[in-house]
Length: 396
Image 1 (cartoon, rainbow, N blue to C red):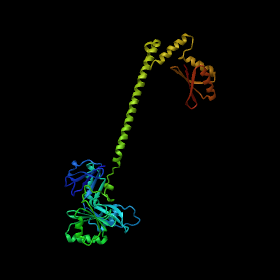
Image 2 (cartoon, rainbow, N blue to C red):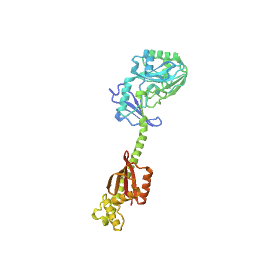
Image 3 (tube, helix red, strand yellow):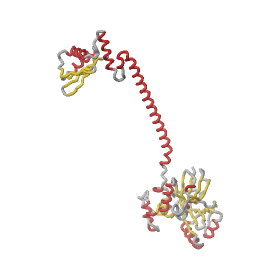
Image 4 (cartoon, rainbow, N blue to C red):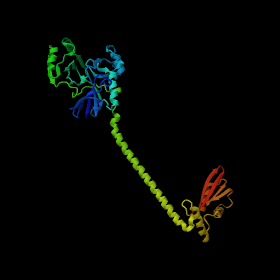
Protein backbone atom coordinates (compact mmCIF):
# COMPACT_ATOMS: atom_id res chain seq x y z
CA UNK A 1 0.00 0.00 0.00
CA UNK A 2 1.52 3.31 -1.08
CA UNK A 3 0.89 6.57 0.78
CA UNK A 4 1.02 10.10 -0.58
CA UNK A 5 1.94 12.41 2.29
CA UNK A 6 1.14 16.11 1.78
CA UNK A 7 2.48 18.94 3.96
CA UNK A 8 -0.27 21.57 4.32
CA UNK A 9 1.42 24.84 3.52
CA UNK A 10 -0.48 27.89 4.92
CA UNK A 11 -2.60 29.57 2.26
CA UNK A 12 -3.15 26.51 0.10
CA UNK A 13 -5.10 26.24 -2.15
CA UNK A 14 -6.06 29.93 -2.39
CA UNK A 15 -2.66 31.63 -2.43
CA UNK A 16 -0.26 28.69 -2.92
CA UNK A 17 -0.16 26.69 -6.17
CA UNK A 18 1.20 23.45 -4.73
CA UNK A 19 2.31 21.51 -1.68
CA UNK A 20 5.40 19.62 -0.58
CA UNK A 21 4.77 15.89 -0.93
CA UNK A 22 6.38 12.56 -0.22
CA UNK A 23 5.52 9.12 -1.59
CA UNK A 24 5.94 6.26 0.86
CA UNK A 25 6.20 2.66 -0.30
CA UNK A 26 4.53 -0.43 1.09
CA UNK A 27 7.10 -0.68 3.92
CA UNK A 28 6.99 3.00 4.77
CA UNK A 29 10.18 3.83 2.89
CA UNK A 30 10.52 7.15 1.09
CA UNK A 31 10.37 6.42 -2.65
CA UNK A 32 9.85 9.93 -4.08
CA UNK A 33 9.41 13.51 -2.95
CA UNK A 34 8.81 16.94 -4.38
CA UNK A 35 7.06 20.29 -4.13
CA UNK A 36 4.62 20.85 -6.97
CA UNK A 37 1.08 21.52 -8.10
CA UNK A 38 -1.54 18.75 -7.73
CA UNK A 39 -1.21 17.74 -11.38
CA UNK A 40 2.30 16.47 -10.67
CA UNK A 41 1.49 14.46 -7.55
CA UNK A 42 2.00 10.72 -7.97
CA UNK A 43 -0.80 8.22 -7.61
CA UNK A 44 -1.11 6.38 -4.31
CA UNK A 45 -3.47 4.04 -2.48
CA UNK A 46 -3.91 6.38 0.49
CA UNK A 47 -3.35 10.02 1.28
CA UNK A 48 -2.12 11.68 4.48
CA UNK A 49 -2.30 15.39 5.21
CA UNK A 50 0.32 16.72 7.64
CA UNK A 51 -0.53 19.82 9.66
CA UNK A 52 2.62 21.93 10.19
CA UNK A 53 3.87 22.11 13.76
CA UNK A 54 2.23 24.90 15.74
CA UNK A 55 -1.17 24.65 14.03
CA UNK A 56 -2.50 22.19 16.60
CA UNK A 57 -3.23 22.92 20.25
CA UNK A 58 -2.80 19.98 22.64
CA UNK A 59 -4.66 20.42 25.90
CA UNK A 60 -6.87 18.47 28.27
CA UNK A 61 -10.34 18.65 29.82
CA UNK A 62 -12.45 16.84 32.38
CA UNK A 63 -15.79 15.55 31.18
CA UNK A 64 -18.71 14.54 33.40
CA UNK A 65 -18.87 10.81 34.09
CA UNK A 66 -22.23 10.59 32.27
CA UNK A 67 -20.66 11.81 29.01
CA UNK A 68 -19.29 8.78 27.16
CA UNK A 69 -18.92 10.23 23.65
CA UNK A 70 -18.62 14.00 23.67
CA UNK A 71 -19.53 15.93 20.53
CA UNK A 72 -17.40 18.76 19.17
CA UNK A 73 -19.93 21.25 20.55
CA UNK A 74 -19.54 19.83 24.08
CA UNK A 75 -15.74 19.80 23.83
CA UNK A 76 -15.70 23.35 22.48
CA UNK A 77 -17.98 24.56 25.28
CA UNK A 78 -15.75 22.94 27.91
CA UNK A 79 -12.62 24.62 26.45
CA UNK A 80 -14.22 27.95 25.57
CA UNK A 81 -12.48 30.02 28.28
CA UNK A 82 -9.01 28.99 27.10
CA UNK A 83 -9.59 29.58 23.38
CA UNK A 84 -8.70 32.69 21.39
CA UNK A 85 -11.49 32.08 18.85
CA UNK A 86 -15.04 30.78 18.89
CA UNK A 87 -15.33 27.05 19.75
CA UNK A 88 -17.28 26.38 16.53
CA UNK A 89 -14.30 27.60 14.49
CA UNK A 90 -12.21 24.58 15.48
CA UNK A 91 -12.22 20.82 14.95
CA UNK A 92 -11.46 18.56 17.89
CA UNK A 93 -10.14 15.06 18.57
CA UNK A 94 -10.32 13.37 21.96
CA UNK A 95 -7.16 11.55 22.98
CA UNK A 96 -6.15 9.23 25.80
CA UNK A 97 -7.42 9.30 29.38
CA UNK A 98 -4.73 10.80 31.58
CA UNK A 99 -3.70 9.72 35.07
CA UNK A 100 -5.88 12.34 36.76
CA UNK A 101 -8.99 11.15 34.86
CA UNK A 102 -9.03 14.01 32.35
CA UNK A 103 -8.99 13.54 28.58
CA UNK A 104 -6.31 14.75 26.22
CA UNK A 105 -7.69 16.93 23.42
CA UNK A 106 -6.17 18.11 20.16
CA UNK A 107 -7.77 20.97 18.22
CA UNK A 108 -6.99 23.01 15.15
CA UNK A 109 -8.59 25.85 13.21
CA UNK A 110 -11.33 24.45 10.97
CA UNK A 111 -11.67 26.81 8.01
CA UNK A 112 -8.28 26.32 6.38
CA UNK A 113 -8.33 22.58 7.01
CA UNK A 114 -11.84 22.09 5.62
CA UNK A 115 -10.97 24.25 2.61
CA UNK A 116 -7.90 22.08 1.89
CA UNK A 117 -9.81 18.80 2.35
CA UNK A 118 -12.59 20.01 0.03
CA UNK A 119 -10.03 20.90 -2.63
CA UNK A 120 -8.34 17.51 -2.29
CA UNK A 121 -11.70 15.75 -2.69
CA UNK A 122 -12.37 17.75 -5.84
CA UNK A 123 -8.99 16.52 -7.12
CA UNK A 124 -9.93 12.92 -6.36
CA UNK A 125 -7.66 12.70 -3.29
CA UNK A 126 -9.35 11.46 -0.11
CA UNK A 127 -7.53 12.14 3.15
CA UNK A 128 -7.36 8.90 5.09
CA UNK A 129 -5.40 10.59 7.84
CA UNK A 130 -4.89 14.20 8.97
CA UNK A 131 -2.02 14.26 11.43
CA UNK A 132 -0.28 17.09 13.28
CA UNK A 133 3.44 17.19 12.59
CA UNK A 134 4.09 16.85 16.31
CA UNK A 135 2.63 13.31 16.15
CA UNK A 136 5.37 12.33 13.71
CA UNK A 137 7.92 12.51 16.51
CA UNK A 138 8.76 9.11 18.03
CA UNK A 139 6.26 7.93 20.62
CA UNK A 140 7.99 8.59 23.96
CA UNK A 141 8.12 5.99 26.73
CA UNK A 142 6.18 6.50 29.92
CA UNK A 143 7.57 9.55 31.79
CA UNK A 144 9.62 10.41 28.73
CA UNK A 145 9.76 13.09 26.03
CA UNK A 146 10.58 13.13 22.35
CA UNK A 147 12.35 16.31 21.30
CA UNK A 148 13.17 17.81 17.91
CA UNK A 149 14.57 21.18 16.94
CA UNK A 150 13.41 23.24 13.98
CA UNK A 151 14.84 26.50 12.77
CA UNK A 152 12.22 28.55 14.56
CA UNK A 153 10.88 26.28 17.32
CA UNK A 154 11.17 23.32 19.63
CA UNK A 155 8.90 20.30 19.10
CA UNK A 156 8.22 18.23 22.19
CA UNK A 157 6.00 15.18 22.37
CA UNK A 158 4.99 14.31 25.92
CA UNK A 159 2.73 11.29 25.23
CA UNK A 160 0.64 9.67 22.51
CA UNK A 161 -1.84 12.57 22.53
CA UNK A 162 0.07 15.47 24.10
CA UNK A 163 2.64 17.67 22.42
CA UNK A 164 4.04 21.18 22.78
CA UNK A 165 5.27 23.64 20.16
CA UNK A 166 7.70 26.22 21.58
CA UNK A 167 8.55 29.03 19.15
CA UNK A 168 12.14 30.28 19.30
CA UNK A 169 11.83 33.48 21.33
CA UNK A 170 15.29 33.98 22.72
CA UNK A 171 17.47 31.82 24.89
CA UNK A 172 16.03 33.06 28.18
CA UNK A 173 12.45 32.50 27.09
CA UNK A 174 13.20 28.99 25.87
CA UNK A 175 14.88 28.12 29.16
CA UNK A 176 11.92 29.44 31.14
CA UNK A 177 9.36 27.54 29.07
CA UNK A 178 11.29 24.27 29.24
CA UNK A 179 11.80 24.69 32.96
CA UNK A 180 8.07 25.20 33.45
CA UNK A 181 7.33 22.02 31.50
CA UNK A 182 9.93 20.16 33.56
CA UNK A 183 8.24 21.29 36.77
CA UNK A 184 4.97 19.68 35.63
CA UNK A 185 6.73 16.39 35.07
CA UNK A 186 10.42 16.16 34.18
CA UNK A 187 11.18 13.29 31.79
CA UNK A 188 13.28 10.38 32.94
CA UNK A 189 14.05 9.46 29.33
CA UNK A 190 14.66 11.86 26.47
CA UNK A 191 14.42 10.76 22.82
CA UNK A 192 16.28 13.39 20.78
CA UNK A 193 15.84 13.63 17.01
CA UNK A 194 19.04 15.05 15.55
CA UNK A 195 22.74 15.01 16.26
CA UNK A 196 23.01 18.29 18.17
CA UNK A 197 19.54 18.38 19.77
CA UNK A 198 20.70 16.80 23.04
CA UNK A 199 23.40 19.45 23.53
CA UNK A 200 20.94 22.28 22.77
CA UNK A 201 18.37 20.82 25.16
CA UNK A 202 20.95 20.46 27.94
CA UNK A 203 22.02 24.07 27.37
CA UNK A 204 18.42 25.30 27.71
CA UNK A 205 17.70 23.01 30.69
CA UNK A 206 21.02 22.43 32.45
CA UNK A 207 19.41 21.02 35.60
CA UNK A 208 17.90 18.04 33.79
CA UNK A 209 19.47 14.64 34.37
CA UNK A 210 18.22 11.49 32.66
CA UNK A 211 18.69 8.92 29.94
CA UNK A 212 19.16 10.16 26.38
CA UNK A 213 18.24 8.07 23.35
CA UNK A 214 19.59 9.36 20.06
CA UNK A 215 17.56 9.01 16.83
CA UNK A 216 17.71 10.42 13.31
CA UNK A 217 16.75 14.03 12.70
CA UNK A 218 13.06 14.75 12.44
CA UNK A 219 11.76 14.60 8.85
CA UNK A 220 8.00 14.75 8.20
CA UNK A 221 8.49 12.99 4.84
CA UNK A 222 9.44 9.59 6.26
CA UNK A 223 8.67 9.72 9.99
CA UNK A 224 6.11 7.17 11.10
CA UNK A 225 2.81 8.46 12.47
CA UNK A 226 1.87 7.09 15.90
CA UNK A 227 -0.96 7.71 18.34
CA UNK A 228 -4.67 8.26 17.82
CA UNK A 229 -4.71 11.93 16.81
CA UNK A 230 -6.45 11.96 13.43
CA UNK A 231 -8.65 14.84 12.31
CA UNK A 232 -10.06 12.84 9.37
CA UNK A 233 -13.38 12.29 11.13
CA UNK A 234 -16.94 13.44 10.57
CA UNK A 235 -17.13 15.89 7.67
CA UNK A 236 -13.38 15.46 7.10
CA UNK A 237 -13.51 11.66 6.87
CA UNK A 238 -12.34 10.02 3.66
CA UNK A 239 -15.45 7.80 3.58
CA UNK A 240 -13.80 5.16 1.43
CA UNK A 241 -16.48 2.55 2.15
CA UNK A 242 -17.99 2.91 -1.30
CA UNK A 243 -14.60 3.00 -2.97
CA UNK A 244 -13.54 -0.14 -1.11
CA UNK A 245 -16.62 -1.96 -2.39
CA UNK A 246 -16.56 -0.38 -5.84
CA UNK A 247 -14.31 -3.02 -7.49
CA UNK A 248 -16.46 -5.86 -6.14
CA UNK A 249 -19.68 -4.11 -7.16
CA UNK A 250 -18.22 -3.36 -10.59
CA UNK A 251 -17.13 -6.99 -11.06
CA UNK A 252 -20.54 -8.25 -9.89
CA UNK A 253 -22.26 -5.83 -12.25
CA UNK A 254 -20.21 -7.10 -15.17
CA UNK A 255 -21.10 -10.70 -14.31
CA UNK A 256 -24.82 -9.90 -13.95
CA UNK A 257 -24.80 -7.92 -17.19
CA UNK A 258 -23.06 -10.80 -18.98
CA UNK A 259 -25.62 -13.29 -17.66
CA UNK A 260 -28.53 -11.04 -18.66
CA UNK A 261 -27.05 -10.54 -22.12
CA UNK A 262 -26.56 -14.29 -22.53
CA UNK A 263 -30.14 -14.86 -21.37
CA UNK A 264 -31.41 -12.26 -23.83
CA UNK A 265 -29.49 -13.86 -26.69
CA UNK A 266 -30.79 -17.29 -25.68
CA UNK A 267 -34.37 -15.97 -25.55
CA UNK A 268 -34.02 -14.32 -28.94
CA UNK A 269 -32.53 -17.53 -30.33
CA UNK A 270 -35.43 -19.57 -28.95
CA UNK A 271 -37.93 -17.06 -30.32
CA UNK A 272 -36.29 -17.29 -33.74
CA UNK A 273 -36.29 -21.08 -33.58
CA UNK A 274 -39.99 -21.17 -32.63
CA UNK A 275 -40.80 -18.73 -35.44
CA UNK A 276 -38.95 -20.95 -37.90
CA UNK A 277 -40.77 -24.03 -36.57
CA UNK A 278 -44.11 -22.24 -36.94
CA UNK A 279 -43.28 -21.23 -40.50
CA UNK A 280 -42.15 -24.78 -41.31
CA UNK A 281 -45.30 -26.33 -39.83
CA UNK A 282 -47.50 -23.83 -41.65
CA UNK A 283 -45.79 -24.73 -44.93
CA UNK A 284 -46.29 -28.44 -44.22
CA UNK A 285 -49.96 -27.88 -43.43
CA UNK A 286 -50.41 -25.92 -46.62
CA UNK A 287 -48.78 -28.62 -48.73
CA UNK A 288 -50.78 -31.39 -47.06
CA UNK A 289 -54.07 -29.50 -47.39
CA UNK A 290 -53.73 -28.58 -51.07
CA UNK A 291 -54.91 -31.96 -52.37
CA UNK A 292 -58.01 -31.62 -50.19
CA UNK A 293 -59.03 -27.99 -50.49
CA UNK A 294 -56.86 -26.62 -53.29
CA UNK A 295 -55.93 -22.95 -53.25
CA UNK A 296 -57.88 -22.35 -50.02
CA UNK A 297 -55.09 -24.00 -48.05
CA UNK A 298 -53.85 -20.85 -46.38
CA UNK A 299 -52.31 -21.26 -42.87
CA UNK A 300 -54.62 -19.81 -40.22
CA UNK A 301 -57.83 -20.07 -42.34
CA UNK A 302 -57.79 -23.66 -43.64
CA UNK A 303 -59.43 -25.37 -40.64
CA UNK A 304 -63.01 -24.63 -41.75
CA UNK A 305 -62.30 -25.60 -45.35
CA UNK A 306 -60.66 -28.85 -44.21
CA UNK A 307 -63.62 -29.60 -41.95
CA UNK A 308 -65.97 -29.19 -44.88
CA UNK A 309 -63.76 -31.42 -47.01
CA UNK A 310 -63.79 -34.09 -44.31
CA UNK A 311 -67.58 -33.76 -44.03
CA UNK A 312 -67.94 -34.39 -47.77
CA UNK A 313 -65.90 -37.56 -47.41
CA UNK A 314 -67.96 -38.68 -44.41
CA UNK A 315 -71.24 -38.09 -46.27
CA UNK A 316 -69.85 -39.93 -49.30
CA UNK A 317 -69.24 -42.97 -47.08
CA UNK A 318 -72.67 -42.78 -45.42
CA UNK A 319 -71.42 -41.16 -42.18
CA UNK A 320 -72.90 -38.02 -40.66
CA UNK A 321 -71.02 -34.78 -41.24
CA UNK A 322 -69.05 -33.26 -38.33
CA UNK A 323 -70.16 -29.77 -39.30
CA UNK A 324 -73.86 -30.64 -39.13
CA UNK A 325 -76.29 -28.95 -36.73
CA UNK A 326 -78.87 -31.67 -37.21
CA UNK A 327 -76.44 -34.32 -35.96
CA UNK A 328 -75.76 -32.40 -32.77
CA UNK A 329 -79.45 -31.57 -32.19
CA UNK A 330 -80.47 -35.17 -32.80
CA UNK A 331 -77.91 -36.50 -30.34
CA UNK A 332 -79.02 -34.01 -27.67
CA UNK A 333 -82.68 -34.86 -28.24
CA UNK A 334 -81.88 -38.57 -27.96
CA UNK A 335 -80.34 -38.21 -24.50
CA UNK A 336 -82.60 -35.45 -23.08
CA UNK A 337 -86.01 -36.53 -24.37
CA UNK A 338 -88.62 -33.95 -23.44
CA UNK A 339 -86.86 -32.73 -20.27
CA UNK A 340 -85.16 -29.86 -22.10
CA UNK A 341 -86.87 -26.49 -22.57
CA UNK A 342 -84.82 -24.42 -25.03
CA UNK A 343 -84.99 -20.61 -24.83
CA UNK A 344 -82.63 -19.83 -27.74
CA UNK A 345 -80.38 -21.68 -30.18
CA UNK A 346 -77.26 -20.67 -32.09
CA UNK A 347 -74.96 -22.67 -34.38
CA UNK A 348 -71.65 -21.57 -35.87
CA UNK A 349 -68.48 -23.36 -37.00
CA UNK A 350 -69.49 -26.77 -35.66
CA UNK A 351 -70.56 -25.45 -32.26
CA UNK A 352 -74.19 -25.63 -31.11
CA UNK A 353 -75.18 -23.33 -28.23
CA UNK A 354 -78.52 -23.52 -26.45
CA UNK A 355 -79.82 -21.42 -23.60
CA UNK A 356 -82.04 -23.38 -21.23
CA UNK A 357 -83.43 -23.09 -17.73
CA UNK A 358 -81.89 -24.50 -14.58
CA UNK A 359 -80.90 -28.17 -14.75
CA UNK A 360 -80.02 -30.61 -11.98
CA UNK A 361 -76.29 -31.39 -11.85
CA UNK A 362 -76.98 -35.16 -11.89
CA UNK A 363 -78.99 -34.79 -15.11
CA UNK A 364 -76.29 -32.75 -16.80
CA UNK A 365 -73.65 -35.30 -15.79
CA UNK A 366 -75.72 -38.16 -17.25
CA UNK A 367 -76.18 -36.27 -20.52
CA UNK A 368 -72.45 -35.54 -20.70
CA UNK A 369 -71.58 -39.22 -20.31
CA UNK A 370 -74.13 -40.34 -22.91
CA UNK A 371 -73.01 -37.69 -25.41
CA UNK A 372 -69.38 -38.62 -24.88
CA UNK A 373 -70.25 -42.13 -26.10
CA UNK A 374 -71.41 -40.46 -29.33
CA UNK A 375 -68.11 -38.48 -29.55
CA UNK A 376 -69.83 -35.22 -28.64
CA UNK A 377 -68.48 -32.94 -25.93
CA UNK A 378 -70.99 -31.13 -23.71
CA UNK A 379 -69.99 -27.92 -21.90
CA UNK A 380 -72.28 -26.16 -19.40
CA UNK A 381 -71.95 -22.55 -18.25
CA UNK A 382 -74.12 -20.11 -16.29
CA UNK A 383 -74.73 -17.01 -18.39
CA UNK A 384 -77.17 -15.33 -15.98
CA UNK A 385 -79.20 -16.34 -12.90
CA UNK A 386 -81.63 -19.15 -13.78
CA UNK A 387 -80.17 -19.64 -17.27
CA UNK A 388 -77.68 -22.27 -18.40
CA UNK A 389 -75.73 -22.28 -21.71
CA UNK A 390 -75.17 -25.71 -23.23
CA UNK A 391 -72.41 -26.02 -25.83
CA UNK A 392 -72.12 -29.14 -27.99
CA UNK A 393 -69.06 -29.89 -30.15
CA UNK A 394 -68.38 -32.95 -32.28
CA UNK A 395 -65.16 -34.64 -31.10
CA UNK A 396 -62.68 -35.89 -33.72
